[in-house]
Length: 322
Ligand SMILES: NC(=O)c1ccc[n+]([C@@H]2O[C@H](COP(=O)([O-])OP(=O)(O)OC[C@H]3O[C@@H](n4cnc5c(N)ncnc54)[C@H](OP(=O)(O)O)[C@@H]3O)[C@@H](O)[C@H]2O)c1
Image (cartoon, rainbow, N blue to C red):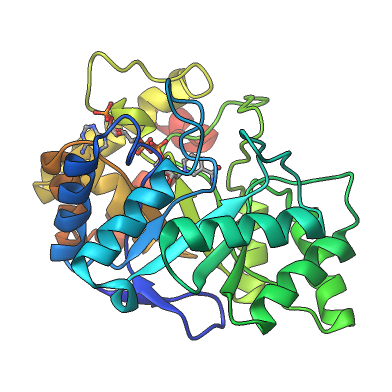
């Protein structure tokens, strides 16, 4: 698998990241390890988890994903080949949530223990905490970097102005800035005013910001739980409408031209976009993971990229209707 360097750091990761919120919860230990093996056997080295995954799943309390990954890395002896991203900020049993210095110190130690490691490759603020001064948060994160417990800082579900504020403050105070941004993103564009609760989508503004500052953009929920290809998974209301219909038509035509699945074209489109977006793939079955990794073999022409990117734009729509 191709290798990507995160931000201006020296941390190199695979061109696809594997998302693990279901690992060790909905997906049992044996199947979880088998899925992680599929990803690693294809050269995948970048794994995304979170401290509270999957506290929302019946019978779980959080930490299941990290612990399962920790046991997998210990069993395979591959920790040095794997880059782990994990996060804090949401509450779960035993954790009040937020980004205070105390939470950051405590949750980092818990994640290290569960992952059976001495460092986290990418440590994210998983959501914002408007009650804690940004200075306190960034100083605490910087302390973890200085201690060698964390290698890169990331912001997930933060508004652009908050990332800018944190990085400006870090630059003034000599703290480590965020180098990675992880937000929600897919091929369909959210409808105006679409609500995703605490989740924040990648915007054109955020793309420009990341390009300007040499930051890496990472995307989650890229396949809308399989809605592009599965009739039993309706397109979520936040996306459904005429624009999504136009984009689906473009996706289908490009997929037919290149002989790939719709999901593969979405992943290829993200990777080839400007700026490139590093997709978090998921999948609860080997076939899904293999299909998603197969996107790495798909190359889209400049014309296909343009057609996909502009599908649903008002002027394209009008020209098409004429
Ligand atoms: N930072 C954040 O706030 C945040 C938020 C959400 C997610 N994430 C990260 O992103 C990861 C993925 O999120 P997500 O689950 O929302 O992503 P997603 O890509 O929208 O959905 C993944 C689900 O889609 C289905 N799927 C995957 N590949 C498929 C394929 N090739 N064909 C058909 N169906 C397919 C599977 O559903 P079934 O298992 O039902 O078959 C799979 O579990 C998470 O594990 C987590 O690491 C981060």
